[in-house]
Length: 371
Image (cartoon, rainbow, N blue to C red; front, top):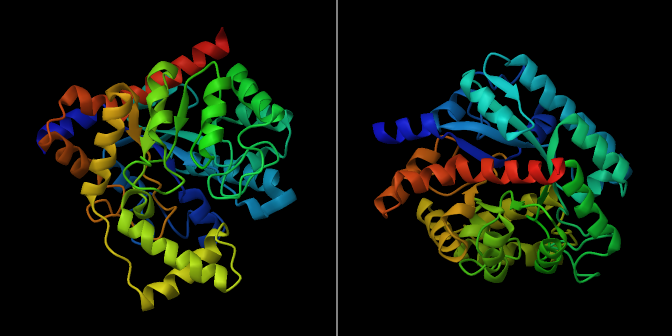
């Protein structure tokens, strides 16, 4: 493990998605004095000591708000951004805001964890390119085109398709993101939106927290024909650890829980409501376990289809109730890398996985915006 410590010192993990900020909102209204993530904690998957232990050198903090926020979505997003700034300021000895690949590396040279922001749903821009541009000025560096619900200009993976992809405004959103220098994030969108976005974009895209559809047939995962296009696009798929996305048995269990939710009149796109149904369902039908090896299987499949230069990590910590055995919190990355090394991944492969691919994708996106 000493060799992995050296590797992670030279090439820290850039994780694509973490929901700690929304967890803090629900826990206590962003009170970092009451729940001090600067110390080791037990009620979240994430805190600063465990990020260090896990070799995480940069985190895209999700400034997520649920679709049900409606007209408050823009204001709630700004509150999330404000919380990110407050967290960075409180722990300024260990955290630094970053908005570019160079900024990430500057934070590393200063011995701090780079903090980036991503907005997890097109509903958060309120159908306004002006809001999109202002989010960029505030430091948000990716927008997930949808969350669990469709927006008027793009279909979600977990809603009934309406458009069959992007409409004209959706394509305009993608082009504007290219122009200003914001990563197009295709997690959560329908497979047709993935294809339309790749047809439209002039910059590399990312999947901030998605896995391989061929390994687990959840609609949130990426089909092989889309993965295969990442090599030409220059983008990166950041494989997630969410059990229902990586383990087929858990996926099938979740289908049963969703059916119960629908029978009770609960909209399965309403995450807190669905999670409440799932916890009750768990009492009757315990969910099967998921394992670190499930994530390995997805990483190897994505690598096989799109190549070693187009793969990264997007754990989705603090965005789910539970995680695979061996990846229970943000200290799990070294265990995952050790398992990959045991399967023949070289240190160069692992360095690309942890950070070099994401940095390359960011730089390419920045070059398009500057061009």
